[in-house]
Image (cartoon, rainbow, N blue to C red):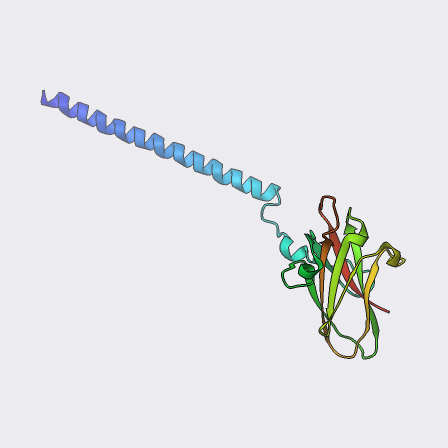
Length: 186
């Protein structure tokens, strides 16, 4: 009788070993399939290719026609002129203008995506602690579809802050809108 018990115990141990071997084999096969699948996805798709930082790229555009770069302002909000010209308005850009002394320049706004009449798009430009407030007017369009919002002469480095917003008087819905700002030599 003792022999039978030993053979049964041995067979139970062997059975457990077989189950463990089967389990380890299945896990190994699944891990190999996972590694092969991930490798395939990485090599076939653009998963690991460098991407443009959209936060940074949405504010800086390197599409220059002449020699300067453009700054982009997106998704203007509806607000009053008092709020629009203040620091509460987060839709702004700051530029530093420098160059040869006594050279003329213009700050030009180019509508990229805009379904709102330009007379409802307001801006405030701050130069040397002077603030100029106006709206983009279709009558002020240049030959290249830009709107000159400021003209100046370089005497030293100047910090210019441009804030944009949609007038409270606008009654339509505000959808996506986007504007490029460019400094042009004159």
